[in-house]
Length: 605
Image (cartoon, rainbow, N blue to C red; front, side, top):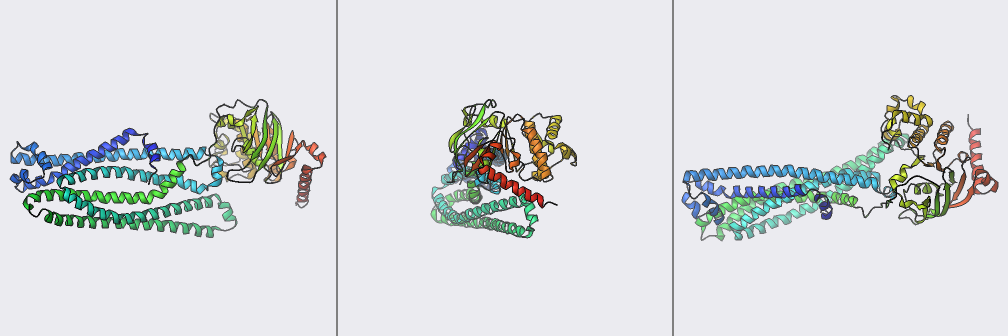
């Protein structure tokens, strides 16, 4: 049920705990066996059968009793009682120690697995998130990793139970191999019937995992889309959808619990029937030697009676693992790295831009897609210059911007920085020299100060205030309830679009990047906000090497060069004045947008 190689990968990190679990489990089983086998001699001694004690008991017990052969009857009785008591105490001490060690081992393994899943989530390429729903990922990291935790605990309990069962089975074989064959046959029938329960548990466990995943995904969509839901008054419909998912999930949970609850009574009844049948089988098997066999049969039944709860426990653990199997499979699949996209990191620390950035004949297709998004892009961005990308939606502007910080790598061609392939640079050092301000600004549910200083260490309040002033954000921040210590809510819900943009610019200013990427930073703003943000952008982009994606062409007049894209190709290249003189695609875009803006202005109150 587990992918053993995965579990072994984490288990070998804790060899002492693993060895301690095995030793304590084996010790507990030995002490349990000793205490169980001496019970019959103790009963015989209490009943005054001292003479038959050595004559009729099994050879294994006779060897143990020889240790007390030099004692009188009273002393022997006390020693037997003391031995049983000591065995019980040692068995419970070993069990308690095993429980503590197993819990620590389980916690360590789960912690390792959860941290590894989070590391993968942080390191995997953005393409992974484009193909997987965020709710599914959250469910895997939270719910399914928790199932892995339960699975690990069940496996540890399984190993301890198997060790104890092995000791008891050895005792049974030593006492009577004939009876043991019969017992194995009867218990095998019980195990076959339990297999039906286990298959049902596996089925309901898979259903439960799928329903939990759908529920998590829907809940995430509702919480992130709550503004749209309220805007269209769709609360009742969304409630019905998630309520249905909850009912389906609870139904699967109830079905598993029903199967699980049925296993206990069934195993108890089958255990009692097995004991009774063993008495009958023993009676006829040793018909001629009944007197001699009575102590053996009694000892055998005591050991078997102690074994049956362990068999029931084994079947219960198997059912639990079957129920967890699909969730564990989902978690282990997530933890595998060979089925996910990871960028190969370069080894050269990025020293900073010295000359230029060059897109050299770039072709690009998104993974698992056939359409070519970029087709032979060649573009040079000298140090300290601003290059703007313009064109209709879908022309490939944002894709070019995503290639520069290595969110993706080109399908063909190379991006060169100072003549060296971008892929040779260490990603972290490269991105630390870049600043990105996009149309969709993300803000954490934290303070203003935290969001502006995010990703930087040892930043002073004065530095944050200065960045906010340069970004035209200082005044509105002071008007917030607690100023720079104001909690912004989920995704910065307290701020307007223009305020979020100025926060993002303040963040970029504080980082003081050498390379600046502006991805339609003003496209969704009103005129007043656009002016404030544009002023902040002008402040930010001074002496920076800038790649600007512009939706509003009025914002790129001062660009040193404008690249006009159409269907993944650069169709025109030049300054604003040069492109207007060409009377080509750029001019048509510009005049169309200017006419549209004029019409909007004429209808303004």
